[in-house]
Length: 246
Ligand code: NDP
Image (cartoon, rainbow, N blue to C red):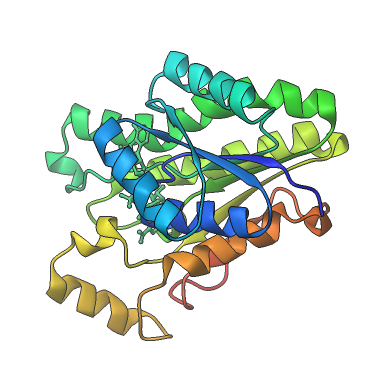
């Protein structure tokens, strides 16, 4: 199997860490970005203790300049980016009639504009080399909406339009572009929700439990595989049956 260079944004988070580990387990060389050096070094130590050697590059994905610098740094350190997982994300929940422009802007910038910022410096090289895997981590709530998440649902839904357009533009060049839409996964993002709300969410999920980060990473591993070359413009729902159908 080929060892590829992978960049996972937000790789130090709950789902991101599992994705980094999955790609490394598949034999790929994996880099991720950080904003806070101290936090990132602590993460690197923890993952080293688990037997992993990830490359860390500094960069805030909301800044086009920092995103490009981050990609160039990965290229210098590991080589051209062949696998890109746009995973960095945040929530700033609130019902829309009370939502501020800052809540709206932060979520759109981090979850959606970041996808432009990071993919743009990567795509030309993939087109020249005629191979690439690009995956956006969307959300169940980008498909079905959620109370208090007009900003987040709009950003995540935007990822799907981006994915199917980029997939069309690059389909003949060996580049696949897909989204993975997780349901509720037990990471800091979801553990910040009050326990009684989480219990209600779990009761609503046909499998009766929240997802594990590794279960999302498994889907990413599936889509980046060499044999997944004919899967493009797709969305993979990984949500324990919480949202089924179209
Ligand atoms: P976490 O909060 O655990 O991790 C988020 C990661 O994104 C962190 O590494 C964080 O870095 C990084 N990040 C945030 N903002 C920026 C920024 N401006 N620039 C660079 N990096 C940034 O979240 P999860 O692991 O739970 O979520 C990962 C993805 O999965 C997100 O896109 C989320 O929307 C999506 N998702 C999550 C679900 C869940 O149930 N957890 C469900 C559906 C989708 P830092 O440490 O610097 O903040």
